Image 1 (spheres, rainbow, N blue to C red):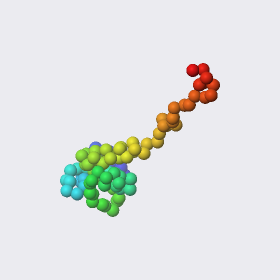
Image 2 (cartoon, rainbow, N blue to C red; image 1 turned 135 degrees about the vertical axis):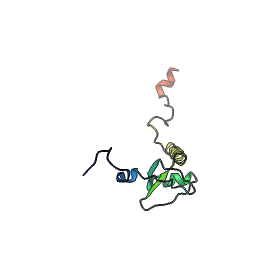
Image 3 (cartoon, one colour; image 1 turned 45 degrees about the vertical axis):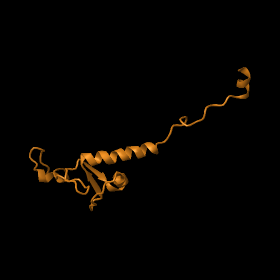
Length: 102
């Protein structure tokens, strides 16, 4: 049976009520993000951060560490961003008839 929000106790809310700590070594801040270890591991490590692994394969990050790893992620995505069809095309060469007009 579900209780209305006003009647629920904090312990009934599951992980949302728990104050998770940041997974980065020597950081005691409260985590604001819960990220997948598979997709964020490389960005966290490239940011020079070492984290504690857990059984749920999640990385919990506080605001400061999330910003650091997100900067790395955005720079990586920008480097490997797909270019548009005409962005890298060379200038169009004039045809045989166009050069005669000039």
